[in-house]
Image (cartoon, rainbow, N blue to C red):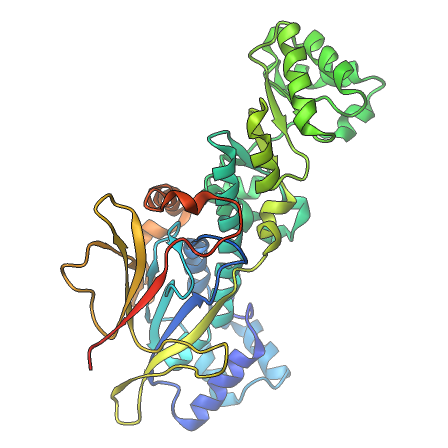
Length: 437
């Protein structure tokens, strides 16, 4: 039986439903919206990730006997509400940005249309997924830009939770990483996996040469040998002696990489191994990757920085009610007015306006109206779930590959300054166009 996701939520989601059922307002048609108030400090753009994963989790948002008994024994909700929850199946509509899309502050990334009770129950799950996955994807995209075409592998499983590690590998792959060390991410999402040996394997053997021979015997001479357990120059010499000219790569995991990589490249060339590549893995982030652009690194492995969003493990997204029926059954826009947290009410239709060259100039959000037919740009909302059923193209391995391709396409619309690592404002402004009075 597929595990329920219904308790991956905050208690107040249930107590709000309970109170609304008592008040008779739980069935009011409503529109909820997920968006980020801002980007992480200094970032120029964000990348949407987690959408396909979220849709699968929403399908499993069911209250079975065990979930209901927990709520009952902890007096979370009344018997009437527990009966309602027992029959809960999300039956509404979800639209939003494609997974892999670029986003900016206040972009309406995900829109949930349903009854109040059906939609509010999903708040915590939606934010848990989008906040983490989008943060990882946004950081990973900066690393991909900094790498300038050199391949990157995600290898941060030991620096985050065991389930977060799978989500991070998925998000990084969508953002342009080429592989992951996490086998479950490979099995579940079809991401290429990589990995050979750690320092412990070298230290297991009586000599570095014995360790290298054991690895080459098992994996072939095209493997990657970790050469910095003891002395790097000696390790490179031993690696070449053991694997010969077919040695695939050497890996450096410590030291001053700016000088060390150049020295190792010279040594490999002098030993007759010009085709042996160099992979580096030493607490890398987008800034160290950019700093290594001038030295002959061939590939990067990134751990802690990518799975923590390079210092921003959450993308700052929120989930707000923006429209609902009133007591007379009429649609009304609703918005917060609180200081520093005001929101924009109403149904929205975002369009990325483009100039004649196809470069983005604004994120224009039409409120309470459809985008005009003559708007030069690309409508950003697409259907993701209709009547509680997710669209197949967003799910599984197929959805991941589609998101990866869309991210590459969407990045090509951004102006050049979007890819600068120096702190700056969002590269495209978000503009709200209200319905004329």
